[in-house]
Image (cartoon, rainbow, N blue to C red; front, side, top):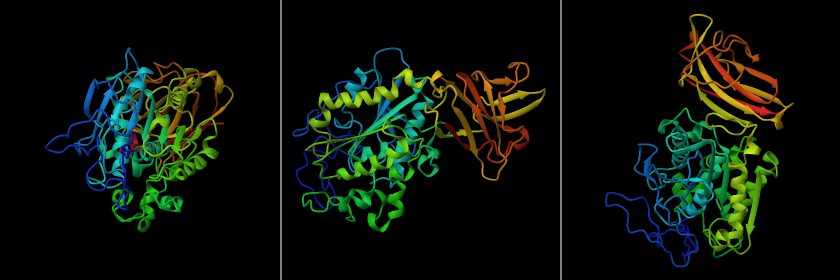
Amino acid sequence: MDNSSNNMKTMKPGGPFPGNPPPGMHGHGGAGGHPPILTTIPGVDFPVTAAIAQHPDLAYAAVSPAQKLDLYLPQGAGPFPLVLLIHGGGFMLGDKADPMSKAGTDQLLEHGYAVAVVNYRLSGEAKAPAQIWDVKTAVRWLRAHAGEYHLDAGRFGAWGGSAGGNLVALLGTSCGVQALEGFELGCPTESSEIQAVVDWFGPVDFLLMDQQFAGSPDAQTHDAPDSPESALIGAPIQTRPDLVKAINPITYISPSAAPFLIQHGTADRLVPPGQSQMLHDALLPVLGKEKVTLTLLQDAPHGGGPRFWSSTNLETVFGFLDKHLKDRSASEGLLEKGAQVNMDGTYQANMAAGPRIFSFRRNMNFYGAIHNLTIGEQDRGKTLQVEVDTGSHPVCWIELWPGHYEGDWVNWTTDRGQEALMRSGSQPQPNPAITWKIEPGKYALYFVASSRTREVSDTLITYHLKTT
């Protein structure tokens, strides 16, 4: 996953990759194809993947040849929880074919996870936030094709090291942030939400990295105009704090952020361990100790070496992933349909995404979106709050109905044979909201736009679910 390496012997102000790429690593192949792939890398200890992707080179977008992923499936019928592996390389090097980029794939498959090893545009091709746009688009594309590849669309995790750690952390905190979604790349009606993050030594606040390395003469320099971070944003980082903040995962932390396992070596001289400490300290008061863990691996350098890949540490990693992506008892009260899993969160829906046409009371047609919920016994007696952000525009109203939505049409009078449990109104209104005392069962939230407001029903809405 990380391509910034233990086998790098010299660090220069220009970044960890001056000149040629290190052994076993390369940038995305051009017209001449990839150079030979090495199966072993002297001086770097990590598990070399033996598995072969059943679905290689799947294009999740069409802007760049880099926008591809390799999909590996475990044995069985599925649907499988999925882990995306996001490679490192200072945002300037790395490829899904590199041994380090797909390290951990065999172990994930053995634990019953599907694995998507994802390429994204590197900084030499596109500046930030193109990288997170690509990764989020890969998540949405995988959700859109979950049925085809036997994936569980509600159980996606992401694991990345170094630059990949930054990107998976952004995935975990910024779902629904318009500027980081890259909806124009594809699958805009799907969510980029993930349900678990494994962040290995990822940078978060580039502006503080050199300060945190003060007194360490052998440490990497990040403020330099030609550092990987400066290359990523297209300017010396200290001259554009606005751009740095925009790709800092801490900027977007909210109660809807995914659970995090953060790990960092105390001997890291490329990314200061203080970066992971900052992320942990920002997440902890918002998510709580049940959802945020920081492990500092004593004397471990940058690059995911033997301390990271030890059987003991992998038990920690898979214990975390299993808890948040496999533990069915912990998810009885979670959202069942679509991209969302966490009950609490901020989501988006396309008001015209089909099948979303309703026949109601004779010949009146309505447009909107539906979100199915399955609520378990552990949530009995809690209060569910649903709010829609529409500004001053009367876009929709909210209804809560018993049972899940299925099929192409809903005739609320003849098919349902019953009334909604709750409505925010019967006409589109600004910022509609409902509050409901939870009872276990299956339900459908309807976000309804009248036929008289068809011109606004093509837009995305943002809505919030919160249990108290």
